[in-house]
Image (cartoon, rainbow, N blue to C red; front, top):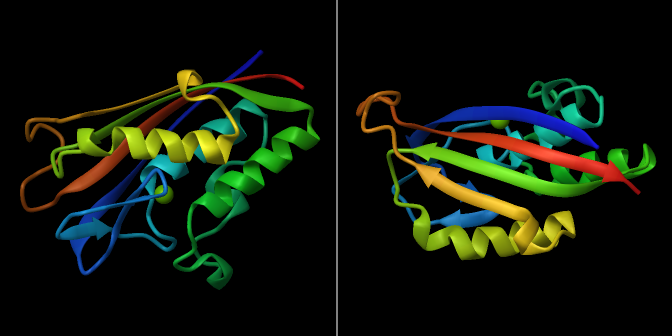
Length: 157
Ligand code: MG
């Protein structure tokens, strides 16, 4: 059994679409980033790479590479999963905590979990997903953002 942990954070800005866990979220702002800025998939991908003893997401997919510009983050996740399979690992469990003061994310839990289950080829009862607010203690009103923590467990194929 292998355990991996990571987190990611991106600023929320106007003029960008918000995508979390590969699902479009209705909001007046989106996450700034070289790719689609999906912090959930970035944290998850990085935790998986970490568990597999692989280089981190920024090393494998540098944000200076035009090939990854505005790329859907599911691409990074699928590449990481392939690398894990090559090393003889499969995903056993995933625990994700999104940290955001805006927007309200609970209406999207079901959709996000379904999509994660599809991408990971993992049953939904092995995936935990929830969101927490910081009550303004982490993100300032004029500088909003979204953060995600990811913990994963791998087992041998
Ligand atoms: Mg990121």
